[in-house]
Amino acid sequence: MPVDADTASLSIRGARRRRAREGLARHDGSRRSHRLSRTEENPVVVPLTRPLAPAPYTLLPAVPPFMLTSDDVRHGERLPDAHAAPPHPNVSPHLRWEGFPPQTRSFFVNVFDPDAPGPSGWWHWSVADLPVTTTSLARGAGSPDAERLPLGAFHLRGDDGVAGYVGAAPPPGDREHRYVFAVHALDIEHATISPETMPGAAACGATFHTIARALLVATYRR
Image (tube, rainbow, N blue to C red; front, side):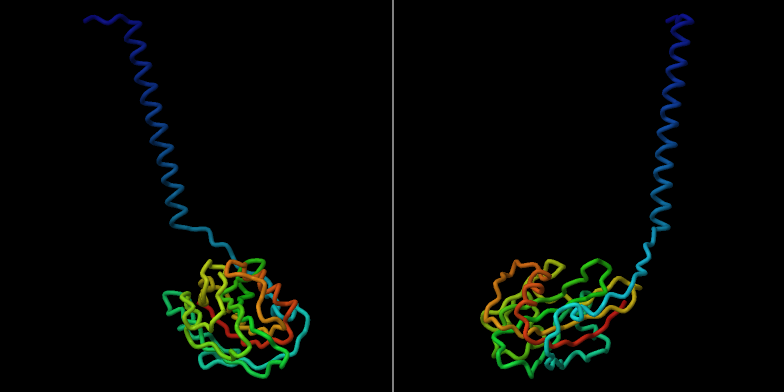
């Protein structure tokens, strides 16, 4: 079938436009691919250099100390891997306390990392409503099933969202982190909180009823 000159010219121009569009698409795809591959091969590393956070309880009203010890953790020493987050066993350490005031009605226990790279540190474990007759927590008492807690005591959800103990897990390569184990002697038998209370809010509320405090600090880095 014969084709006139105008039709042939239109066909040629249309073919050129299609080839140009295809070429642009290939070029754009290649650029996207190149950008992705460069990002994957050379990820941006955000430096975590920052001032050292103060010891958290120096910022609160001063209260008398009492003694906190552990069969698993030594004050001022490295936290054993058994008490670090997965792939480590992630088991809460044994804790024992004594020398608290006779006016104590209950205990509140928590573990805090003031060196986490955020404005409010990181809460690893909180246990509320421990009766005054309780003077220790067995190794593994931080299990989410709460089977090793005394009757009436309960876990709060930590910053990981877990109602139980979550071990040390500082960013790889970051400086040494401090893990502050604290037992707060309270002048009330039951705290006005629930298992859904945020750990920071619970710690703040406990300050108003703390008559003495025992501390044990361990360190950990990866």
